[in-house]
Amino acid sequence: MPNAEEIKQRIEAAIPGATVEVEDWTGGGDHFKATVTAAAFAGRSRIEQHRLVYEVFGAEIGGPIHALSLKTQSPQ
Amino acid sequence: MSDTEHNQIRDAIGQAISEHETILFMKGTPEAPACGFSARTVAALQSLQAPFAAVDVLPDPRIREELSAISQWPTIPQLFVKGELVGGCDIVLEMYESGELAQALGVDGESSQELEAAESEAVAPGLTQIESRLG
Image (tube, rainbow over all chains, first blue to last red; front, side):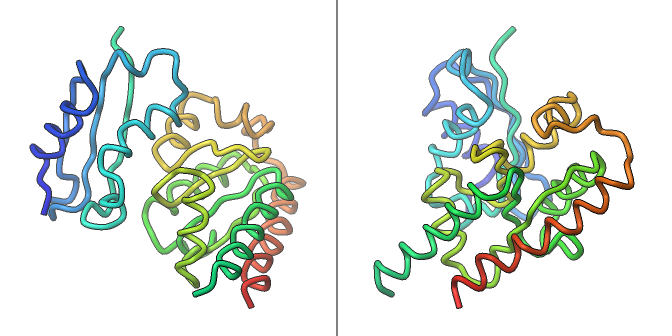
């Protein structure tokens, strides 16, 4: 069972320089909400930004991680 | 399950995406969404009075598998406009709030009887299309 801290660490490890905040949305350990700020997002569409984050988890999304709500942005 | 069956589903999804200017793949139907994310996405489209076709992915798990293979997007809902993936619930709501969604859909976001009628017509064909092809 993933937890918010583990999800945060995995995104930060996969996207160098990313700042990540993750909250367990329901407290049930399967619906998470993440805000990811990364220079790697600059010049990419929202779709591409979200894909970069989803790729970190592959098939776990929709599996053990039922939902990962995302807000992505590049640093101002 | 044969590769042929998978290909048929994939083709039917591809065709539905190309035939409908705005099409939403969701859990449940616009009238009875089966997931909060699908419900919120439908609500955004409806509040803009945007006509859209809808496909329920729940009746057959292969719809979702093939859709995600085509779109390279792991979650449901998925909104396509003019053949392109616009996003899932998060992106659609972000775009709704910023006004970009109305722009992408070519609507002004204001209430109109005419558009409301168009919406109910557009939903049914999308729903029947994939299911009948899966038959």
